[in-house]
Length: 431
Image 1 (cartoon, one colour):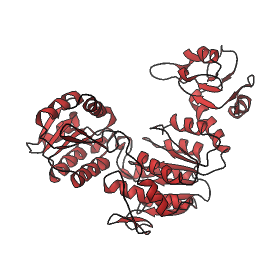
Image 2: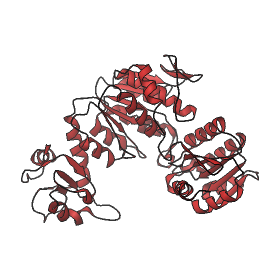
Image 3: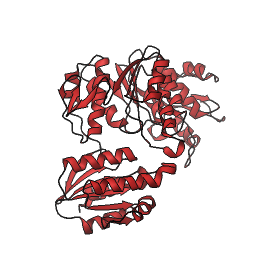
Image 4: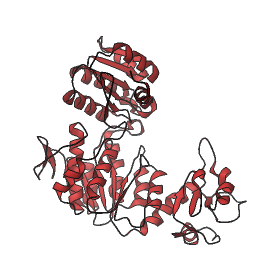
């Protein structure tokens, strides 16, 4: 249980009547005894509208307006108070906290590392995709008292975001999967993305550990400047993938995730787990049991077709990796339903052209392209393999018409293209 009076002192606001809480919520419908509600204002609603209901249900609330009586903290900014409260919660954690970030592969890497650590420790991890300025504080504030290791996924799409998240989380070990071109529209260069990812290293505890991609000079320099212990992963690094084996341990990797990119991340996970006290062989065995989440490599059959569901988000690196893995591990004919890759800035058109060229080179017989970016890119290439669609429903109609029996169908696109709806419809009604 945490004290509302103690939190008020941390936030520098007037002390309320005492209230003990062990749950922090952003949804008023979850209110009840021992819950603390942060009344955030969003695009669609204002949490202050529901404060009275929370108080009536036996909860307490953090607000930025007056006029409420009872177990209430009045602050200048509810959002800033949430982040400050999470930093306050972090100070009471006397166990390792791990931060994971990267341009792609964060969620899969986080789940693999949690599985490895669970072989020895009571491990808590980020749930779902709660990896932003609201989700990370919720995780810190709701971590059970008996936790022995906490694994946090940390996302960003602007410079400065990881500084804020890292300030609250203060990881003792930071793992960066890769530096890619996701969210490129918000940065002037790939170097700018690397600098933004390096922010997590600036917040890593003194004497902490940095598990970083080999050859990323910006990350290496920042880790050295911070005096962190450095473990590099990837070709040429301290740990690497060689013919399907995790080196330098010589462990044969067996994953439920397809693709070299996932195996590379598994190698980084084994290194991080070993540094936290897990035998590499045990870590690899634990990783082998992790199943893909929907939208992140889940494979299922519908009729005589096989679907590879990679519908949860896309950038050039992850899309190319998924195209290659599908072509390597699954039978032809190969079909890809590709949704536009968003937030790529000036590189958008060239990136979409490169993906189409890659897919053709890999032998995909049909590419169903969803969105204006892929449509524009397809006009520059001469191929009869392309079909264009304005949205997922039209794409599904095309797929039903053109998919040959026993085809393997990869579905990949940015979340904004809603290709997960196509997958849900196929699972619900078949094809």
